Image (cartoon, rainbow over all chains, first blue to last red):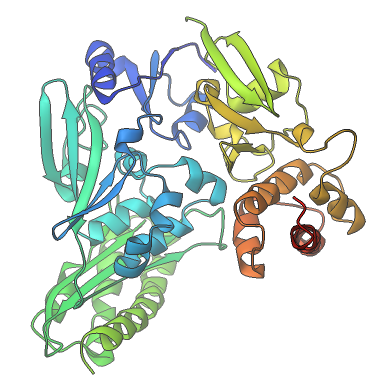
Length: 296
Length: 164
């Protein structure tokens, strides 16, 4: 491994000051399950590594009003063992509990997952389904932006909007209410230690009569960032959620995946079919939750 | 490159070492501390051979920089046996024939140990999930699973007798 200087700041301010000093030459270590492997293989060659994993102030899951706020250094193990996440935010629970392996979930953090922004990042798919927002901090101040805007942004690494002196400190989203169902399904070659082939997320909110007031469908590994099934979402909006209605969106999912992945013939033929099977599973889960909770 | 000082509770002993930071925890344990039970397999967090117990959790040390070990408590397989007596899990792996080539065994045993330290009476499913990050290419997993189950049984008997 190439030489570098290592810092483990004790406070967030210290971390921000280090990053301000070293800018692009520094890499943040927020768990290490991606970056240490990249460094070991000489794909990433930072001059300075700033290990922020010991900043316990960024390790939390808080409910504030109608929002759930998660500190960027909260591990997948902490998220998947949190009872509020288990009961209220199935999409995030399912995604977090399937990341890598138990060992990886004890090291890897949600902030690291979102900042690395891998095509196959299950945390990215789940948080996009929840329309989450992220908080970025630097010595210059603090900014908040929707995750979609963050992923779309042009920062120093062209992966996302992070500037060279910024640290992601928090991700937050609306807590799903009693009329909201969410689900996630990871399609992969095996149950554990597998990279997602499709990481599909879904959120449906209904009113008292079961009419859809909000729908969010995002498929990881189907585009550079989780594919947004806009046509399918629009089809559900304003209508009563039934299995028939949900299944009417399947051709739309097929077409959207084909359109997104047609330049990659080795994967598109499998993915445009399998996306429909994956969403069928999600529809069953969504209907179970809606029927169990709100109307029947 | 500046050296860093690492202070670590390793297998129950406080240790200090000054090293260059461009090495991983697996290198630190194997090369600096000569704890060669820690095996390097895939080098990318996918096989679990390099698993140790880090602050109570099973983690893969090929995905960790040595600096991350500072101020931590680490248990490797060398730390399990006491006064020349094998840990219950080690004995169960032997008794059940859960070892073939042996390369995955230290990681398997430490992953199981981390589980039992937190949850002394895990269900079958909890054992399966906990062990899902360790690959074995010889045994087909059945005997490993049996070994962990029989260790759970022995621990439970000990607890009922008011032991460990």
